[in-house]
Length: 242
Image (cartoon, rainbow, N blue to C red; front, side):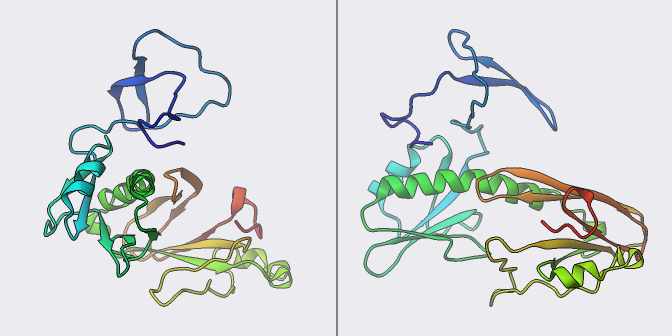
């Protein structure tokens, strides 16, 4: 999508959400009604109060802060604000680095490309919606009780040798992690997901993939008795990795 408010930003129409539930929302057209063609895409153009992405700019540059604050998706915080969700830091040479509390270097914007910086932060807003989902879904009583591991599914012979008895706990190698202990899956590589329940309750588990673009996909579901593990395969088909 083009930058919000730019000359290239010419939507077919706009909708305002008038009611929101846990899994759906109802919207009404702003202005005259319009027909939505098949395959049309939409995007959020203005967040509700309190829902904007909280951005910390280091060092604080007033002109840049004012430009970024013109975005209806961003909220600029003071340089020392503790509750920022994303940080923009000037590097040596003048480039801007976008990072969060997990990775300090998610993206780098070249010197002077302020429109690209705003576009990157607006894209991160959509990704951050998935991170907020994860943060607010934590149950203190179940902290650490559910574990998830990615298992390597690139060895066709190893997959073919799996028996039905190994369905819930296959002897497959774990996908490699990077220096930050984050899974590093090469493009095109295949994997499955092993989930294990260390709690004393039966857990009904839904596995979601929260993409960088803000898309949330349901990968599969399973029910786990206490102390039991299971594997989520693509489309629920044994030996078929994602």
